Image (cartoon, rainbow, N blue to C red; front, side, top):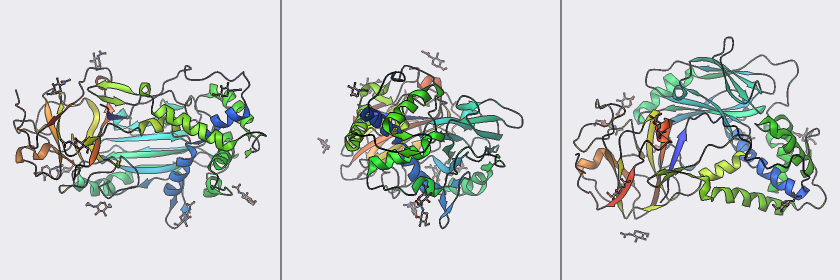
Length: 463
Ligand SMILES: *[C@@H]1O[C@H](CO)[C@@H](O)[C@H](O)[C@H]1NC(C)=O
Ligand SMILES: *[C@@H]1O[C@H](CO)[C@@H](O)[C@H](O)[C@H]1NC(C)=O
Ligand SMILES: *[C@@H]1O[C@H](CO)[C@@H](O)[C@H](O)[C@H]1NC(C)=O
Ligand SMILES: *[C@@H]1O[C@H](CO)[C@@H](O)[C@H](O)[C@H]1NC(C)=O
Ligand SMILES: *[C@@H]1O[C@H](CO)[C@@H](O)[C@H](O)[C@H]1NC(C)=O
Ligand SMILES: *[C@@H]1O[C@H](CO)[C@@H](O)[C@H](O)[C@H]1NC(C)=O
Ligand SMILES: *[C@@H]1O[C@H](CO)[C@@H](O)[C@H](O)[C@H]1NC(C)=O
Ligand SMILES: *[C@@H]1O[C@H](CO)[C@@H](O)[C@H](O)[C@H]1NC(C)=O
Ligand SMILES: *[C@@H]1O[C@H](CO)[C@@H](O)[C@H](O)[C@H]1NC(C)=O
């Protein structure tokens, strides 16, 4: 069985050459180059969708380098993205470094309020994270285009750190932890407004065209997806090189062979290229990665996760595809007990979130979509797991009941009940670690065990 775990925070600064196929010095056919260019271009499509929703605020006013705050948590009627988390509120911004650098202001927030502030390049690679989860110092950070190797760079002058983005365009998605539904208003009114972005005075010579709605949307025919992707890539590729600079010659050769001019920002299909079959091959390449068992890391007890990959080598499309791999499904005609072997060792917080077969949150009478370190879960003897005085590294087991909303839950399970769908629906669940510690990845922490049981089983004995 496979259950899914998502690690949120780690700074993925892995450098490796093992994934690069060495074609820099060999000739590549126009057809093959087109396949590779399309794989490279896939992440641009979701970027444009994201941009058109985040930057296009209040009556069509296009805004970059400014945070747009989300003010509600997902619930069962939320259908915009699958597998939404119910732990954090998002604040999003489109980053445009074409005219100059951008200053990030990160406040000192109240004690115990966790947040993670990730920065992404144009292709969706997570370049750097700051926040409580990474113990970052509050203050100002500077986002620069290729100030050094892409990633987080140390403090400099008035800045607590430099965020070195490998592409001129990018994105950011701050997530602030929310304890419960009644905590949302406080986060929205008192915490979100303390975070901000501000463009520095523009440089004399712009690095690239401004990131406008026209740049991302103008003059394209989206009716022909492969052609659209190649044209979009041609328009932005020159200013948005691969994360790993050593890949630039190889990627440039691939683009040239595929008919993309980095100088003119145009796409001209080379003679003999079958764009549709290249598109099919590119789609298939992504699908193959996402269904390869070897691409997942087993964590024990059936749990698995997607591994951190070297950045700038594999376009993000491949990684995104992996993350959306279907987990093993369960059916709500069965009841299960999840045994946690002690409190998960996280630097931040954690959650176990329930999803229906469609990937959306499961409607239920008590509006509970997850169990986590902020609720009222109890040990079998009735004492609180969190907030009850037991040490944060206690290895005392506690139990979660996965039982359909069709059955009234017995009183002793109520605080540890995570409702599963009605009518024998399908479900699956995701464990999220915000600020995972090494023990979660090196085999020291034993992952939860899941056992099928009768409806409203007796509480496990606490011995
Ligand atoms: C093109 O790709 C095919 C299939 O991956 C491969 O067999 C062939 O060697 C490649 N040819 C060139 C010139 O890159
Ligand atoms: C921006 O929003 C306006 C309406 O608010 C809409 O008419 C326009 O098409 C949007 N632009 C893009 C690029 O999505
Ligand atoms: C779900 O969220 C939406 C949007 O925030 C809200 O309008 C609706 O009342 C919520 N539904 C429930 C059951 O809480
Ligand atoms: C909600 O969370 C806040 C902040 O952690 C806490 O003070 C409050 O007691 C919680 N309320 C409920 C109803 O659990
Ligand atoms: C779109 O086409 C018009 C007219 O051909 C041209 O003036 C404009 O620069 C083009 N816009 C982009 C973003 O290429
Ligand atoms: C639960 O439903 C699944 C799918 O319909 C079925 O395969 C399974 O036998 C059912 N189990 C029970 C205990 O009814
Ligand atoms: C925790 O228990 C309190 C008191 O019974 C209740 O008000 C609150 O809603 C519970 N919190 C959660 C997250 O279930
Ligand atoms: C795993 O990490 C924890 C925490 O850093 C450490 O105490 C433990 O010795 C490590 N175990 C192994 C097998 O590396
Ligand atoms: C999981 O629970 C089952 C049933 O209680 C038990 O047989 C099995 O040994 C447990 N597995 C682990 C890894 O603890």
